[in-house]
Image (cartoon, helix red, strand yellow):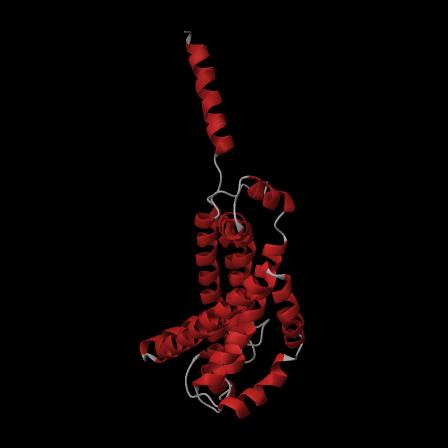
Length: 274
């Protein structure tokens, strides 16, 4: 083999390596948010943004550090996480059960769906005074408000997932001699699982949205209470810091569900983007 051939082969290999090298995905996902933060900080530093009404990223980090050092942030965060988890567990369980009953049975659909749809259209903020009257000013109304908000996405997606199963799959299962329970276990529920996980992702986001409202009901703890307290003192950096914490927890929760989707839906081959 000649020196020219070796050189040509080496050059082609180098070009191929450069052509196939890509920026890691997690880096690509960080480019836009990091760029926005840099632009935000530059605009705030040069006075384009009034820092009295919109704190800079540096101010927010300083507020985060201050509340973290005195322990107030972690105490409030823990209380909010417990409220969100209990509400999501209750609302998600009931939504899953109702979705299964209505999705698997026409009689169940006739008994439940119209009532659930009617309740779903009620203005959420209009229910807050009723929850206070019915359940008092303790933890119960806050948890139940979160449960109510997280119920509907799971119910709707479980119902849609079950009713979206192709009829030919059911007929195929019957041709193999599967009884009703085996059809549900081996065909209907696995096929409905992707929709159920989408409902869970929606419910996680709604849980945090509702919690902000719920923690403003005569609360003395939690992230929502920190927002109310900071607004009374015009501490925009604290308000935006708490909102940033909400966002980070929401991203983390969504990432956990996406990981569950990846593991639970290995059998599903779908388009992943070009």
